[in-house]
Image (cartoon, rainbow, N blue to C red; front, side, top):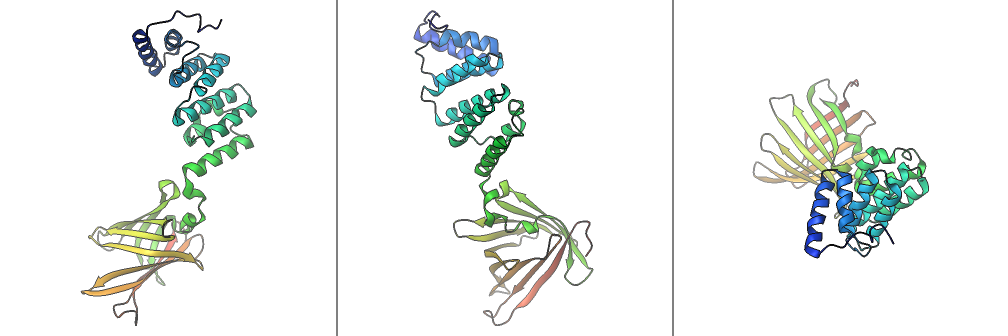
Length: 299
């Protein structure tokens, strides 16, 4: 006869009250009291996957690892929700890691990842994983989770504009005339690039968000300046060491369009060039021509 089966059975209404008490102690991290009440609630025929999981976690924190494993396995055998399933599997992975059972830990970690586990912060910080964190198998699993959590990090198209990331002093091309400063940041898990522009001419500043749109397979930029100027740049494409956008606008009431180009001139230098045509492309005028020099580098 098992320990749980030996417990006196409780009426359904009373059982729900006991479960609520057990959960209350669980949330307070009072593992001993939580366990005592889960024991009262759970029977060998119990099918509450969440309660089995929390019972197992209580035993885990009490250092009762063999009991904890059995409880987690009971949770998994009772049709847990998809989210609960990978939580339990990841807890088994951590339990086996801290008890120096690397193969079992990696096996459960792989199952958890396959079922939706993407807690990269836990993988990086949990002391339970400390014993296996430097193994190649764990590093491979972490990379898999990182790629799932941040898909743009592994998309080569999303990396094409990374040459613009950094802190820059910005000059009028071909001169020593410093016109502004810009901080370009990778944001949203590498899915976008944020421009933070400050002009030395007056108080003008602005921001743009740049991203590779997988639906149209082009880069786009949305710019908003402090003077109320708004512009969208579309059809961005990187080739021959340059990112080229197109745009349409109006100038003095006339329809206009032009090119917006970023030249990748090496690790510490980017040229930003924009032109415009108001005669349907017959002629183009330069709107501006800037050279970005990485901070603390010489122009």
